[in-house]
Image 1 (cartoon, rainbow, N blue to C red):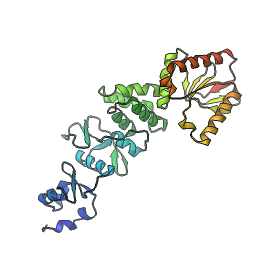
Image 2: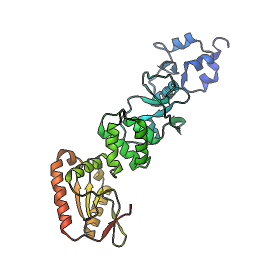
Image 3: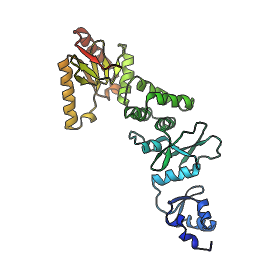
Image 4: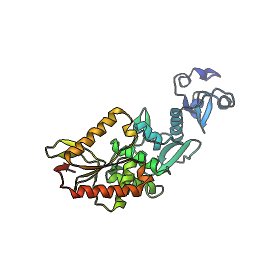
Length: 315
């Protein structure tokens, strides 16, 4: 290829903006030209070793994902927080880097914003916008193993289950396969989810109920009256005495429609003879002892009256 004719190569005209330097050389771009164009003030830049962005502006998150996968080579799979974003999860902390998986026999190492993990269990990828991403259960556990904030882990894992991206059984399998390093906090977060909690606040409530010494109950189960009419799905339900516990946040009642729904729900509780205790999520941490006293008092009230004819949905 004659000097300069590389500028008309389809790779430079129609190809992606993120390319391997080797592909540029194969298109006829001399190595010294690549180096010069990626130098200070040049029109290109090196994102990672051997990976070039064909413009000089700030790389987008999408371009960083492409670069990290190119760095990992053909079978690399995106995992962790960026993968969960591609799947549509929302309750996620900002990613610090791009986490990619490669097979255990590959000699690829982490560099720059690319965190490379070699694994004997390389997942079969799902493709989201043409990028190979790990299935949700694997991506959740890979992300959780690298986080240190228990609330971030709890929120992420709860969303994945609550929005039916995966089940607690799937998360359990992934944790068992992941081994021990970095899994202590995810395992702690998984326990209340297995019992039925579906948020950070409900996980806090689950832990407080365990401290209470009161009988175990059910989380997030629909309740019906004697005629089979739906009443509500309380956060916690003690079927023995028809007692409901709702963890109601200010945020949930931020608009008129949500407030109306809560008022209507509480009216159905009263009409059905159900004793219900409402607790703000913040008080589970700031006033746990007071909440425990309120729980015991409400429980005694429910215990003292005849149990109304209501039932929970069959398991």
